[in-house]
Length: 389
Image (cartoon, rainbow, N blue to C red):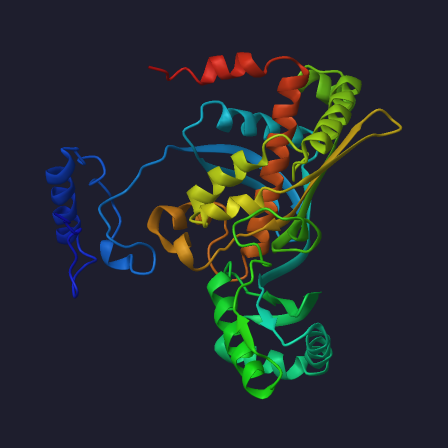
């Protein structure tokens, strides 16, 4: 017999309903949910964040820093919250931050900002699709005007066009303020597409999302065209400092980087770095980001160069970092506190936060690469990852 999870039409977001649901689950499964039911969240604030609320999944939260940044939006020292259950992760990022602080800090640059929805329009034949593309170009201002009626902060920047068979795939590119903006651009694009369908008689049908925006999927198009924030973190590390703090000769370090590039090409990966998803995921959990966006956000391009004076230049570019400082999970109590710790909660803070994430990732890349080069990687995991059955 099907037993539905208890729901209340009028008072579903209450502690009482959470207790009822936990009791139901204990009755059905025999599992104890005592720790799940211990939380400081005000349940009444959760509509829009979760359904069938029963409690919380607690993740240990550590701190790394100070992280020294010379950015256009993030300047100075920051203590970075990292939520993880992986031993060595916080220690590794902390070590990277210590070394790059001694090297003068991390320079950060945001190069682009765009969030997409990618509808596809269907026509009788390829010629109608081609003519429609010309019509879109000629009527961009009207399309933009209709799209922006649905949003206070979203702005349509441009519309990319990709033709195949009797279809035209469009990528609507928006800026979305301090929100990640996926829902915002969905609504705005639908308003525009409904208007297009009504005024253009050759449109047979459209689908609001063709999968060309590649939501929560790594893709080549997002490596070349921004989804979220396109941000670069870079630093130059003196050779003596590298030897002192990473216990690795800079030439050995650089040779390892060349080998990694070759292996990355052979493997066909979307990231020639070491472990950018580690730091990004830990920061996303701590600050209330949509963690599934790590799939896109962790794509990265690492570049290193041995300078004429023997110092080591190292950079990482993250072309599709999807972050927010407003909306979604950022307003949950502990997540908001972590954003406030960084000075990144609320309006006009999202580019600052993007720079901090990228700088953190660079520190983690340097630390892990150093551990591999100095043959200390396994030893570090043995030392800090001892919590085993």
